[in-house]
Length: 200
Length: 307
Image 1 (cartoon, rainbow over the protein chains, first blue to last red):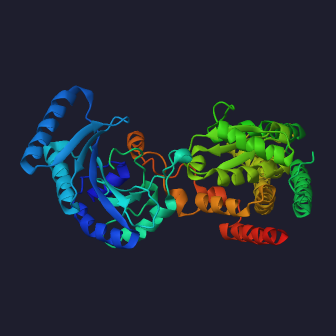
Image 2: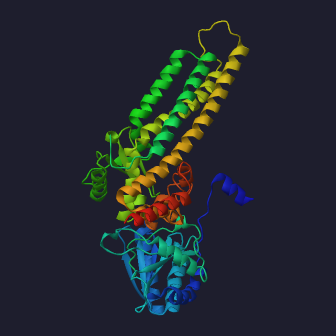
Image 3: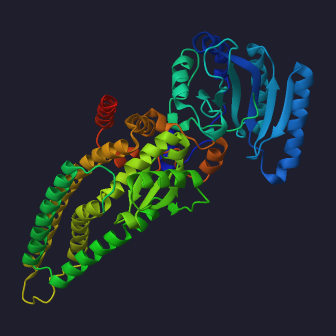
């Protein structure tokens, strides 16, 4: 009933960040390698919105502390950076995909536990064609949207005059492959690109 | 005006027939309005004024409703280069070039004559298509300009607009009891109500008929623009792949960045991801995709045989 009134009055609760679907990634990586010749690059990025100005310094301090702790506890290799769109990234490097997913999950869940979960935007995993693969040399990103708890592929076209263009054909092809192991975002209108993600 | 866009006798014939039927309908409509007692001046002022506005400001109206603006050569050199090339190829004056800031892939041409025309593309279509495909789409739009489709469609859709307007007008007049028969003193109230009802009924029927006529013409006109647009650049396949990109599943995949979409979304109650102007309503005036692709495939085949 409350749901009904929420819908009627246009109220919406902040969607809780959903992290469990992340663990489907290692098996999806195997399928990607056999069926599309793609291998993980060993890098992933966690992207989140910095908080409003007033509390910024304190929160930023908390976050840095948290990340330093994670770094020393779990020996995660991570770097922090701000992108030009005003978002903050934590980039994690770890060649083993299983470990990489665990670390991404750790960074996410500690941000979540410290009350930053409405700030979480997405995690981005990078894949590259295997060295002997006949496929074109495009970087393929899998974007995980926390609020939707689902993945979608993002394949930017590279090349001089490509600009900000994406390879929709490749993306729709990957959708079919990914659906075997992962929860894939079914609404194509939500497959927003993440141009210039600092993950390679 | 002769351009090198191939003449289309089928299109010309259909345009003539549609306009004749619409004209007939128009005369009957005005006659019927006068018969039930609407004053001459009002009908003439409304009819004349609307037609004038539609015809002369069609470009501005379209640009305004699409939130588009005309861009200079410095602002969009590639786009201008394509239009320049196509106009040289077709031997027609160059129209103004506009861009609409929208992620929905779309393009349109407007303006009463080739000289006053504007071709406009959305930022969404530019991001999705490669230069060859964009050229094919612009060629399609320029063929609308060359065939003077805008003037024809303006006149064709005008009657529908007028009928719709008069329906609303009558409803309004009826509600406030005034009526606009005016001056015919000794009619009783019952009679006035009947007249209002009659005007509404006539207007609705006229609107329905003109709607069907313009839709039929519009669909044919699109196929014709596909054909002559593809013939001009000699690449039906480029237009076919562009059509697939802007109408299929691919058109749903956004090109606006997640981070800006997220920020943007915060200001809306309904999610901003909801389609701005819906493609389905836009394409209801267009023939089904399969039919257009089939025609282009046939053309491609013919061109190959001609060598």
